[in-house]
Image (tube, rainbow, N blue to C red; front, side, top):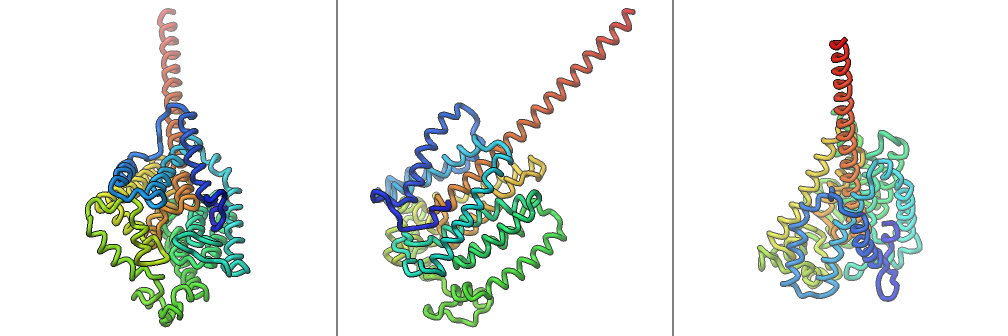
Length: 409
């Protein structure tokens, strides 16, 4: 996740990020059989229709290696990583051992962000056909959402560290000029499942609004919203944003075109990955519509989009049910819920499905981990109940034998 925030590096003609995800899927397919026969607790059934449909859609795509086949194989990493995590992470202590690695990742991303966005690396910061050279600001900002959710979920255990890490991710997001990620980081406080007090939530909402207003008025975010060179100077107010009078980086021009062309094959779509060449033809140098729902609609039609939404909602339901079954005390599940809601929101203005190493892999890892933890907690409670019943039976038998001895006497 940390090293994938840098673009432009390749080995043997393959980008280092590609080597990362290829290694992930290869080791995943090796590790799953080694774990032996056991129940899969990761909610894979909710995603099965989507992946099956995407596999079939290759049949009516162009079968280009990069845009079609590679896209499908990359997405197969998600459930593989989730299943491995559900097998390997069996307690919150197991997950907490990764805290130091997440801190390192944040610091590394922060240093790279400052170097490329504000420092000497700014001269080589660019993106061609979706390939980053320099700092990958949007994927990196998505990484920060996962990290912030993990530490914010532990605020009851490590309050100072949790608040510091959230503030650090928030500042880095602003420097990276990632508007939606900054907004999602603010919303994490409001959707935290374990902050149940109404009074506390009201205080947090007020604090978040004030902090959001302060962030909006920073020169970095103001310039990102209202670039004079793009003709969106406006007055720099939130009212301008609400009216759409801001720099959308071309989204508002491209989205209607992609939506209209999606109507050519409304039910089955054009095939997985087919949106890339089309978007590039109408919105160069971009090759993604920066809206995951619109991209899935173009590639998979109504059926593909329905399967995708089913996967999103079934996973959210799975996480909510896990939190309920563990008595609202499972911080790992709280982190996964916040990260998952962040995924749903980021998909409105970005394409997080392609941010595998940066976002989707660690998110599915978190979902798998919390399912493994929940399964272990419930199994432990079941075994404890069984021991209690055996103990009660033993006490009853002893009492019965005592009564029989007394009667014989």
